[in-house]
Length: 595
Image (cartoon, rainbow, N blue to C red; front, side, top):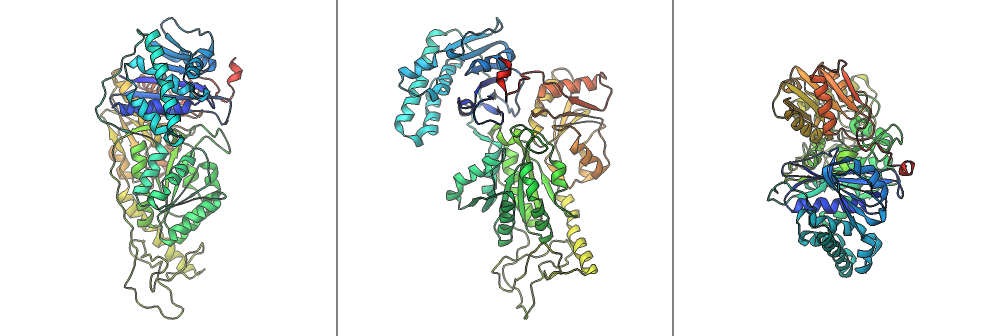
């Protein structure tokens, strides 16, 4: 049984604070919890929402309908109340005025202003009041909420903590007294406390555990919170974190740090990465390890900067001029973001090339109940630290030696007799610049010899469940696909989910090992970018594809409906394009249009 709680209100009303508070509350109570925020690209105005999904089994996707809606204003009632489940609950701030909803919906009106005034609080505490008002519906006490409030506000002083706790208590007692019979059933908790963390925070933590020592970035939604997180941890973990003047500088700093021997990263979104591409090519030619974290959003250009899409894959594939190897990874949840952050640093150093970790707004900003994950450890590759023969005058270390596996020995600055240069020019084995045709071919072939090993170590796609039909997804859409699998099973349609975290380079053998004769690929873009990549790399084609590109992820109900239509033969074309949103089809950017 899943419980869904949707919070809605204007930007500035504390919707996300309220959502994260409720998410942490359920996570600490022993439930699997998932939080999904939606908001327009406005600092003030517009409409914000945050959905919390609670379950006694792993859940990593938003859902279309809500058991409870908490409305901070009248627009939230209009946008979200029609999508409350049968016999659900609407908790509404009394200031929203008269509420017209279906007869089966139980309405709980909370006089937040009065409660706050009596508690000598601030109007900003309305979200805390509504959190306290929610607890009696689940027969919760205030213990965990009080601790969360202490964790959240202790930096502002003991008095702020006490007033917030009093506001929550008074709202709690108001609902308990005035709505004693309004209750909602909870699933049975799993008696294990879980971290409640965003995809970006999990990635940042994984990078730290993986030995990260340098991170440079210029803020860009939805990648910015990796920068914020690492800044907050820099002193404790001895990190160098730089907010550069622009994305070009950030990328160059990260490559320079990699040359100096630091495990380094930079992060941005698609528009920022467009500025970084020349540096990508330099890192590839100089064979300098570096990791690029890319959090996708809708494009092209500015597009819809606070919404999601999986449409930058070919931008990453084609970044910079010329031919060179790269690795592209794409986590599907917080645990995978944590693990792949460390593994990306390992792969960059082991194979001396740029590695990309491809997230998106959906994964980066959603919150997950994160299980404990072991870090992949630290592997530094072929770094030579000592024992090198003395160099003659004018001689350099053979940094780009033509070795059998294509991975030349590497020295760090200051290594005795390891002197060499790393530039954007083609070079001889000893790093001197060259335009000799034979030497050029030698270096091209040397670098290309890494490809065989990369295909050998490429991760096989993960397979979930059994069935003649395969739902193929990559990156962030693991959670929606697994929930769609559950919905379809209840309708007698058994499918398995195949999830790719290693996107490039692909091993044809490993892909063929997991696919069935009936493969439906699901992508959050319009033209089937990963489908095209699989076909180009392996020759494998798919039975059908399901795609969506309106700025939202694919919801499990949409996936299940599309699969059912395809399986039943009701849809004859190969591409099933989801164009119409079947719930909450409102433009959050301009809520005034619906008044």
